[in-house]
Length: 633
Image 1: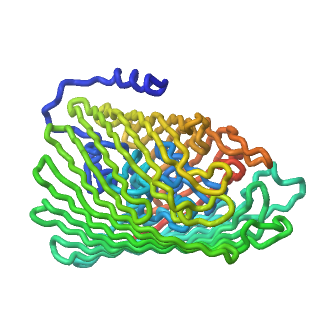
Image 2: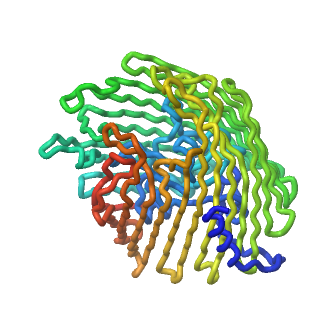
Image 3: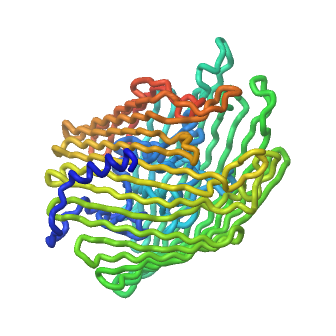
């Protein structure tokens, strides 16, 4: 038995377990989530681990991007390669950055033209999001490919009531500006939500000072982002709704090479996401079908022409275009009050085109998935789920996955136990299948990557729900991982890895004017040779607190601490694994309601002015203060 398992077992033995209660359940929270079971589910009936960050939390904490939200989620590691707009990767429970499925309103936002299919979180803004739900653990049974580490689902807000709107703008001490506004409401059977947001940052160098000789050249790596989003719906009749989701993101970011200033390196991107969804509610709610069709286009243009600082760039002019067509049919059937079924079909067709200095490449792949899950509540306060899935791919054939889970609530003491086991897979990317080149070229014989994972944990409510605590142990066994072994000419399924750890949280509201949230994750992730997996911190801790000393005044504080991590050394001719320095980040927020619909706010990021690097070799931003104003009508 590993030290982690011995520790967890000792904690679980301390949890009081009363006799099976027959009273009505108290419940950990009345909240309903949509991602864990792919249908609205009370959170106390979810058999896995899920974190929900609401729009109200994003506004109170002044989080402008989704990657800022994810930094405070247990089991999640965020790695940004410098300042605003630079490449941002997310690792969930030790899985690779391309092994987590990311959705916006049911749309897969991964780029088919990227090297491994990983999502770049640098450009997703929070302005019109109703919530972000993060489910951790193998979830391919309901979602198919990529859901090895989990699912991150960004859900937008539907308009309701008479027309209302709002806008904000803020200015940072380093001249970064963030602005946004929305207009939403409903009229008869029609509802709408339109959002426009933008960021401009003059930028700083992302090259650490140790690589810059005295008096050497330093350039600024600026960033801009313009995001426009809409959600429009119409009630066709009392039981049928039609909704259109759309999002357009236009960005430009300057970047540098590792350890070297590069004034001519720029990436332009345009991302376009669309989805049409038809929802029904028939036979007194016993059958709720959903049909959706989505289309995405992600265009990237990288330029890096020769300069004095970088006379021989690897690529001078490169274009990438990834497109995806999705169609899905989901059915929720309430067989009885204690038994329901979710079943459906998913179709996904992706295309990728690239042109790098005249060398062209393209590829396509299609996949159809058939899935079903049953959920039973045959014993009061006990929820059991069992699901299976078969995916048929036109390149590598057929893959099957399954998942089982259970949760039980001891209502008298507000104690909830949960546990699940599941399998998951990630399909090879189009580049991994069809990529060309002398080194690490594509391989059409690649098979999917796999994971077998399980978790079990306990959540406890205390002091009439003023305090809640939770502890979860997880284990993942990754296999068939795609790597480029010697002689480094072709990608192959050769690697294995494992991750295990503990996630813990504490939420407190001892008085109505004080909120405290703390999260801690310990994780041990390594490959088959027990070499640590890079960019997966062993220890992460975060603390958030908000105090409301007077009406209309909110003061907040956030601490995040990262230690015990590994990364590749970027020193020339020294490709070893090293341990970068740990770092602690402190931030303050403040807000004051001048009038019921006008708010003044401010915040300070990196209060301690820490000099740190998330990926080794990329300087993170120093201290910066923001002040702004927000209005609503």
